Length: 296
Image (cartoon, rainbow, N blue to C red):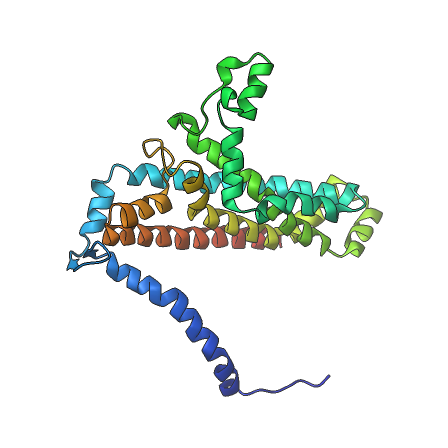
């Protein structure tokens, strides 16, 4: 086989434009954001350098910040709960259905729908019974009227109602990822294991699970980081209310930057969110690297 030999200089010439484009779109805005976080600025007029005062205010005086961090991290943890469910569904679809692609595509449908459509749909489902809310009507019909609630307007339940919407919407996304990973496992491995008596769950334990770990890690990272950045669904359904009960870091950042006109303070919130995302990515990769070494 002929191997095309290319000099490092030639490779650098072709890589450099993409690298510069990536730096301009990712790292330059982050640097600008870090600088903006040190300013007292409304985003329009003159700015004043105040150092780390925004961060001091955030950590010690902002009554919304720490609850928003807790909700954001809880949201991220909840989002990972569906990954094992998606993996088990992918295994069952791959093993017991003749044409699983249709079912996988059906599960994937909510992912391609607009967030506005999904938000309005679930707002209708969560409505009180007298306003046509399906959940409350079902509870009424089975005699569980005491279980009915205004799911999106009661602070105790609103954030968990949004968590459930996110789980429903992205289950098909992770199902597709896991299903594709399982289908890429060579069938010869299962046939050889079958000779040794490894069938059913035993085959999944010793073949499917170890080989699908890299794909599983991708789903975990995407779910966790995506949930840390959750914004659109909350803004469509509750707008962060009632009384900041569903505010996460991203919605708090938006409110401070564009509603309260504290752009410098909003930038400091964005810096914290970036740091959390980086730390979470490093932590997840470290955990899975150790797990892969232990399994190999």
